[in-house]
Structure formats: C-alpha cells, structure tokens
Image 1 (cartoon, protein in one colour):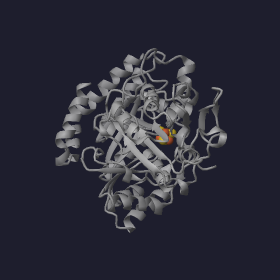
Image 2 (image 1 turned 135 degrees about the horizontal axis):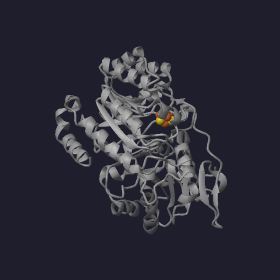
Image 3 (image 1 turned 45 degrees about the vertical axis):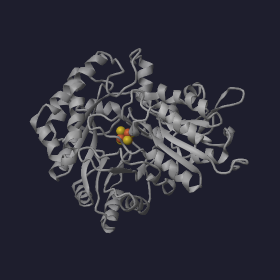
Image 4 (image 1 turned 60 degrees about the horizontal axis):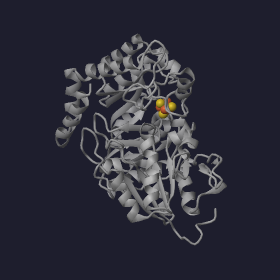
Length: 474
Ligand code: SF4
C-alpha cells in the first residue's frame, strides 16, 4: 500500500452510534443486544482492538461509545465537527441498521472530507444495500482491524487496493474487493482500552468495572442462527496465551480492573487451551474474577475445577431449546441431556450459571416451546434469558426464512420479539411464550434468592430498578 499522499498520519474516529431510542446497546460481532434485564453495557471490544492497531501506527485516534455515554446523534456530530476526522468508522447492527447508516449523512455535513466506513455482521452479509445509503463510502467486511489499518494508511477511497472492503466506484458501480484472509492467531490484536472512558461499564450484579478479553476467535459449529462464522470464520484461532495474560495484566495494573468477561465464539472448544489459559493466570498470581461463555458439550469436571481455581465465577451456556429435534434441526449439535449434565456440573462445583434460550426456531411447536420453558425451570440456573429466533443476514436461518416467506411484514428486526411466522406457529405465540417463560422463571422465590445472593451491596439499587423495569414489560 502507498501511504497517505501528503497527508501524513490520519485522524480517525471509531465509534458505536447511538441507539435510535437512546437505549444502552452492544454491537460486538455476533452479539448485538439491548442493555436488557441486567443493564449490561459491554466495553466495546472491537473499537478497542481497532484503536490498538491504529495507535501502534501512530495515528490520532478518537473512540466513542455513544450508547454507553448516553450520547445522541447531535452529541456525536458535535465531536465529529470538532475532531474533523480523515476517516470515520463505525459499528452497525441488524436491529439498529437504518439509524446506524443514516449517521453517514450527518457526518458528511460537518466533516465533508472524511471517508465514512461501516462494519458489522449485517453489512458484511449485505454490503451492497449499505452502500446504497447516501454518504456511506465503504463497507468493512468481517474482521475489521487490519482492513481499517489499510484504509487509514491509504487515505483516499481505496479502489481495489484494500482487501475486505466494498465500495462505490466513481461511475457509481458497487464493487466488492476480495475477502481479507482472517488474521493469524498471533496477529489478533489485544484491546487498547486507554482511549476510552471506562466508567459506564459495570459488571451486572456486582457494579464493579469490568473488561472483555477475547482469547479465541472463530467457530467451527454450524448453528443455523449464528453469525459468528461469517464474521470471524470457521477456524478456531487461539491467541498466544502470553499475549492474553499480558492483556489481563494491563487491565489489572493500569486500569485497576479485576473483573473480566472472557468472550469468545467458543472459548471452551479446545480443552488444552483452556487449561493453559487457567495455568497462565494462576502462575502469574493474577487474582481476578471472570465469567465466560461455553458449549455444554465441551466442559468436563477437571476443566471446571481448574477454571474455578483461576477465578471463574459464572459460566453462560447457549442452551437454546428443550427439544432435541429443534437442537438437531438448528445444527447446534448438542442434546438436552448434555445441557442438563453441564448446568448441573457447574452448579455442583459452585460456579454460577446463566442459560440462553431461543424460542421460535424452525420446527418449533407449542409442545417444543413448553419443553424449553420446562427445561429452564428444572435446571439449577441462576439466570435465564429468552430470545426470539432472529434471522440475522448471513445465516442459514435468514436464507430459510426468506425462501419460505416467514418474515413478518413491517416488523422491525428484534431478538426481543418474533419477526417470523413459522408454519403453524404465528410470531404472536412465540412472543406469548417468551413473556410466559420470563414470568415463570423469575416468578419463583428460588430465582430471586439466587439473584440476591449474587448481588453486591453497591449494585442492589441499580439492579433492582433494571429488573423491575424489565419485568414490567412482561
Ligand atoms: S457454537 Fe453455534 S451459537 Fe455458539 S458461537 Fe458457534 S455457531 Fe455461534
């Protein structure tokens, strides 16, 4: 690549745009979610990893997480006007897509020379549609860090030079440059949190500051509803353990953070790697507390004991359904028996558990919905979340939903309510069952006892307010 001609190093703004209704909102690869019942706003990992590579190159970087800071579009535009970036790059998500893309016009008004670029799973799957929106110059497809690095070096709209970019030529035609190969594990950057105000990010139930660390990218499993393979690929890429541990050390020593969410598409898929991760934490004497997500078929008692010794306090499982038939059809590749075994094993070892369920997947009936709710109630889960099946672009579920005509006309995309009418199961039925599931799960004294026993005193008032608001919706 030729460096920016005559411009020197660039001024780059990387941001999460405001939620259209001013809500807390996380846009992080396959995970897009409202702050929800626990009011969780994730530290914006992808902004921090992009910042990391840009700062290394010496650029002037500004990072903004508008939903976390309570900033609306006017506040964002004010920052853009004052900073006058050469390049503005921002995350988008399916539920907020129209508003996310519309930000481009506002940026152009105050920074007419800025190149505008959007990223995220939706625009990765449908770059052409994003480029139809006025003043969106580029789409950064899939893993963003090194694509943004090349854009920053190049300055002007990239032509064919930058892999992984879609753009509009001077003649107005839309062009999709070749895909960028996924980064080798050792090149996946550690997050650079120093450019962010971390005060809005508080661990649910604990109200302590926390950070996300992502040791692994990619997922080999073929779940029909998940965008992970589209964004980070199908190969499990495990960062060197020393680099992950140093990232944690920096969080502890520089930022004073002791709580971490170990986020990966499938963190526990490689047992040896997980053991190595735990040993690295223990050998460095890192006294941290962490939670992680996991698959129910990848945990064993020995691993769990080691993880707990290294600071694990909660594990989140994608349990998805209480029906083996639905699990099989969705490609999840687990069984209800495995879910039961894993949740009970974690519970018996004194690790808190969180279960995530999807209602309204293809093949769902009232009976299978009842099985899912029953599973949630019978397992010793501390927390449960129930989502409507969401056909994210780029997934097999999306293709099937479009081809089968399941999408409900006029519905805004959401994981909180059904956007599909399945054969024999209208979306309203799924919504009813979601409400029913929440009422049943959190209507039990045991659920509240579990939550109260996890709450730290400083978190009590805030969490009770969040929980009350959330439950009033149901
Ligand atoms: S196991 Fe399935 S749901 Fe989990 S990250 Fe991989 S593809 Fe997504």
